[in-house]
Length: 239
Ligand code: CTP
Ligand code: MG
View (tube, rainbow, N blue to C red):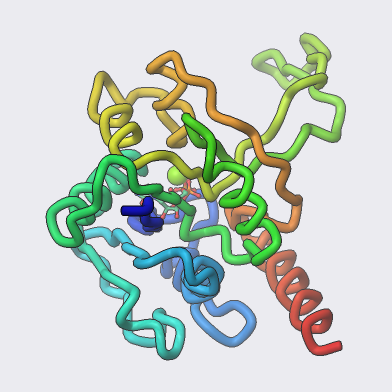
């Protein structure tokens, strides 16, 4: 049987850097909740059989308006988010194994709820670029700016050579069994993305060039940028 594709969207964060009473994944963006754009981006690819959204157990903001129209059958909402992103992802994987009989060889894409501007070109280049890869990998962008390391009082201590430095994005795509093992073996301290767990096993995830437009909404000003990116995408698709 051919390898299937699944996605997990960890969405149990509180958005502490963004601030406010409503977690950023539920804020209105381009006419609908931010997370609906994120889900729509993954569901637009028919290869992705099911998208599992992992919410905090006490999430009071999720409602039916969060699921893109006509997509209910491919969406599962699991209220088993944990204290860290990695735990939320592990619980999404367990749900897929227990309920959908996902196999170790199936591909899993993990995508931040807070990245609503992923487009189909970026998603296809990730999937097409990795589907025959033995390890898997992630979307990322080469660092463009000069990098400075600061001392404790914000004075430059050093300039860091940016050659071969990349900024990691999501989706990150790995064989489900490999990722499950990577996240389950050892401490989750310092594991801020799926790739870092895989690296700890001695494997080297592949970097697939993405785009700046696949930004993560972290601070309030990012929301206005996301709005502009979605408007530009819509204008392009209308021409
Ligand atoms: N996430 C999660 N479970 C957690 C923490 C984060 O599922 N315990 C999710 C977030 O909901 C988000 C993604 O992981 O979709 C990326 O995390 P980030 O941008 O850091 O979001 P928050 O943790 O919500 O924001 P902050 O770090 O500013 O509090
Ligand atoms: Mg966080």
